[in-house]
Amino acid sequence: MTNPDRSMAGKTCLITGATAGIGAAAALELARRGARVVIVGRSGERCGATAASIRERAGNPEVEFLVADLSSQREVRRLAEQFRARHDRLDVLINNAGALFALRRTSADGIEMTLALNHLAGFLLTNLLLDVLRRSAPARIVNVSSDAHKDVGGFDFDDPQALARPRGRTYGTSEFASLLHSVTMPWAHPAFVQYARTKLANLLFTLELADRLKGTGVTANALHPGFVATRFMAGNGALGWFMRCWARVLGASPEQGARTVVHLACAPDVGGVTGRYFVNEQPAPSSPAARDAEAARRLWRLSEELTAAPTPPA
Image 1 (cartoon, rainbow, N blue to C red):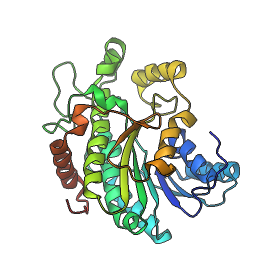
Image 2 (image 1 turned 60 degrees about the vertical axis):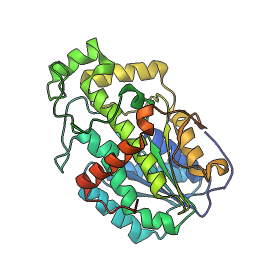
Image 3 (image 1 turned 30 degrees about the vertical axis):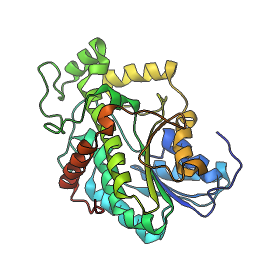
């Protein structure tokens, strides 16, 4: 993906989950367009190597990195503080970090890991940086979701952390059970169901956030990057192996997956668009569950409880 324009010169972009895959590809393209890019990842070594590579390939020295494990709310708060200490503006926030965990895990805060990383991290980071975004308006928030959100009928408010599931569908720590699910019904694997619910949460968050930010000059949109061949499923046993095999055959490149991210970050024709879902750089229909305004408000309240986040007025 190449683009010689300098349309993002003078703008600052923060991208989570940006040491590989879609995040790294989007960071490279934004740097090529002249943006000051701050990438976020868990490993200082990988962040440093990725930032150096982007600087060289983009011919842009203004590529920085911050290190944080976004599944930890303490580290999300530290990340926001470090960003604010270095920068007085934020033109584009891209919440890209996410994962699928074949076996159920909990975060440092005792929250189911998929929910903690895929939804609550972006919710908390966004709210911690909202005042910077408002001061920088016009500014944009881009949330990377997935068409997987259509595989569930709604967010499970009775069991958001996937503690209780029907017999045979328990999201637990058994490698053997995960293998059976992977072989017999991979798309009904409890881990994938929880992942789909968190991707639905991304859309409900975007819907409510856009409503709360009306009139501020800050927009919020979400997207499906496509089925992309990345390291996303590494370290996930049989389920990860099956999904990586499918991705090698059917998956798009990270550069292709990053196109809609970059489009929402800088295309002039979406500058005033907010609260929408995009696929292949075009507005697309999300599921009815993703357009449920009451569910979006309810999820916001739950997310506030789970993060104690400072939030804008409704």
